[in-house]
Length: 535
Image (cartoon, rainbow, N blue to C red; front, side, top):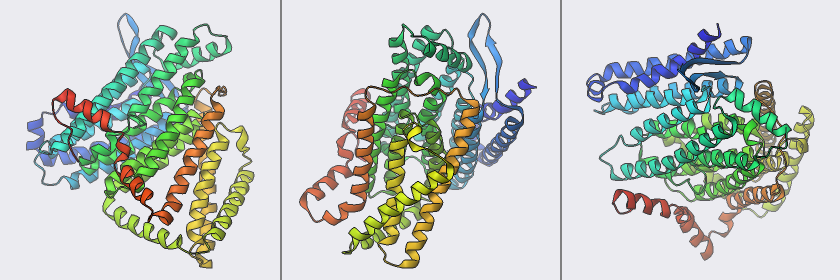
């Protein structure tokens, strides 16, 4: 029975990936068939994801080996399906089905649409295979397949020089990430003698209970996996590929921002029982995540292109997600992945209206921040946010100091509620102000309710170990709090100083991403023998 269940889980991924075997000329000559195939397979994958998730609720998690290389038991293929995998499977298959249907309309009339849909299905299948993989070797294989499919999608507009340049730059950073990942696999196998998740997690618990002599190896494993995740999820200093790839068709951007970029976060959450053995690696991830969130949040505000603004928004959000992982808040990170993916898929697939809405929002905020009573409204907003946060925590019985990274994450939520309330209060319209308080209360309640659900699901299916304190723990928290406080200040008060020369200079530098992409641009030009392209 478990074998049938396992094949039902992995069948959609294999069917989607099989589309990549369809010859290019045949696919382009039978576009109507490919359009129907893309819609049918993507919807079928989403429907099967619902079926197996319901099955999981009644039957429990499974760890099934479906095939093995004779004489090499470490090289096996199978399914490791728990609540974490089910959540990601539902999320990615649903978004994938929506994006595939959108791509059919978006590329109508494109002569290469058949081949594009082949690679879209292949990439989607690779990501689905990644989240249901039974072991690290299978995970790495799916990771490489996803990179291959994404590269082909990014190169769809081969007549656009910047699109090809960005795809090549992304490929170089992906290759660097693959080196980190393969090195991590090698060190893991040397240390633990296995690639299978279940065996790794069990040995990690044993290693933790002992005073392990090979702590350097464990530190190396954690650091390499963290570096691999950073390249995939566009973390500083590997972030510049994401905004540069906005030349790709919108369905590619949506799939990339709502699905593929989450692979790094999923890797960290999946291997959390192993990574908690290396507090230094998680501290590094938290610091880099905070810096990335600050960088993305500031640069996003200066962008005039809606797609580049969304790209830097994704960088900031992924930075926050990695910060959550680095602080040990894996449940909060998974909730962030789900919410961000749904939002960002919608944002890209309706990017035209997003631009108009963003302009209205900026105008409203500019007017709201222009009055003399802004200090009073800010004080009221802070007080209201503190009251709402405190009441919500009391309602759910959550002691924020007992949650991993709870103080930092609570502070970030407090800033978000303050920003929401200040926008409503600054209008000085009582009906809108009351609406703002109601909206903030709903946001806080919905967040903690969702967190409790996610946390209970992960507690039932994942190895849970208390996070050891790192020597850098206090420094990590200071960097995180300072980063988000800086974002809050820039977003809310920079307009008041826009007439000053230093602010205008700062804006120019921010608009260019503080030139942090220059090293990888030069490396790309040096390898491919071309001068740096200009977007």
